[in-house]
Length: 325
Picture 1: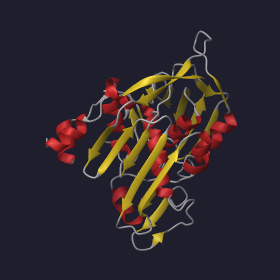
Picture 2 (picture 1 turned 30 degrees about the vertical axis):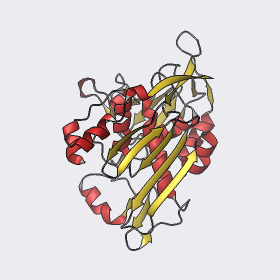
Picture 3 (picture 1 turned 90 degrees about the vertical axis):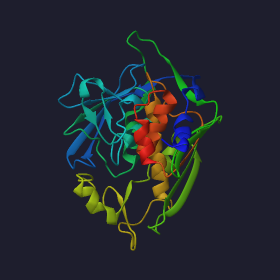
Picture 4 (picture 1 turned 45 degrees about the vertical axis):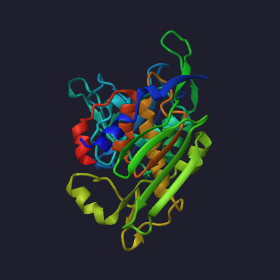
């Protein structure tokens, strides 16, 4: 392993953050709510039902046919090499998996759904809906939120991770970094030099539920037209279409305009980041850290690898990472 790769891997330390009291109770949904649609990679018709649950239980999934095996939405369950989505799998005995969880988790984290039982039927994937988190925001708001109580009827105070010192994880020119901040601030950059309609984009924003709902949640997932055949040949994006993803050609621009924002691809990366960083949550507490997070050309794998090192739960082989770098 190169010295540069070693320094990058060791730069993220669990000593860089601690849990801070928020003075607010943990929350759950006030009522159950469901949404159905196509799974991005499987192409199957799937349903996700969100149900209230007790304080301290956090967010977890139950896949049809595996009712006794909870898959907690925690970074220790995130598969390190999941392709084009975030996949959770319970580690004990190989366990069930649930795929493409990032958009739903993003909306739940941003709106404060700290404890939730998600029942998945029709497959092992969360429905893609329109490719954004907008419908999940609408579903959560239609159900409403309330203070969660534990099995003894007691409310629990919500804790939040807070970054105390700068930390980063880098591979080549891709990186995720976190800096101390009094509030959540996200800056994200992407660069697609071979796709002029996308090109280099940056978006920076503070984050609360209203900013998220209006500026981040509507941003849809996207792909490059010339890469579709290869991805489908690998058994991926069987459910992808012009109705649930923005498609951009290297030479012809957007195939299904209009875009919702001029920088919609970059905003969608922030949507994904919020969903992936929600996996730092434990026991019904906040997942996204109070920090200024800056990311550049980072995808799901780098997001979750950063969290593994931050939380001290790294399961990634460092020699393999060095070869990738």
